[in-house]
Length: 89
Image 1 (cartoon, rainbow, N blue to C red):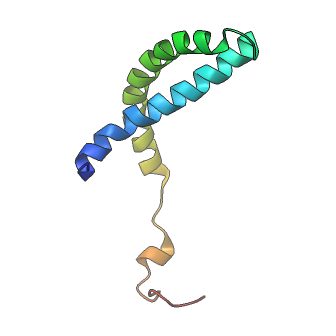
Image 2 (image 1 turned 60 degrees about the vertical axis):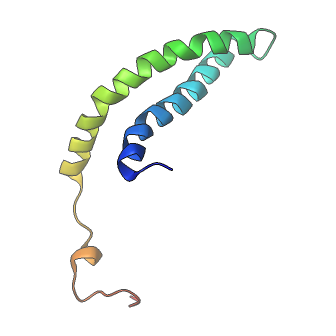
């Protein structure tokens, strides 16, 4: 079982692995079509996609978080003391 801190560090590589796999498969299938050799071509291209995507995610993620923090406002319901759990409306 992972600790919350370990899970935080594992999140980016896990998402990058899955997304690079999906995207490299989609692009390989689009380029080659669904035919013989598709899986071999995909498995040759996936490590390249991962090698590009992981450092890109590490560079892009902090800026994305900072941008979202600047454009996010607190939810009124979360800060309004008159609104309590269970109250409707």
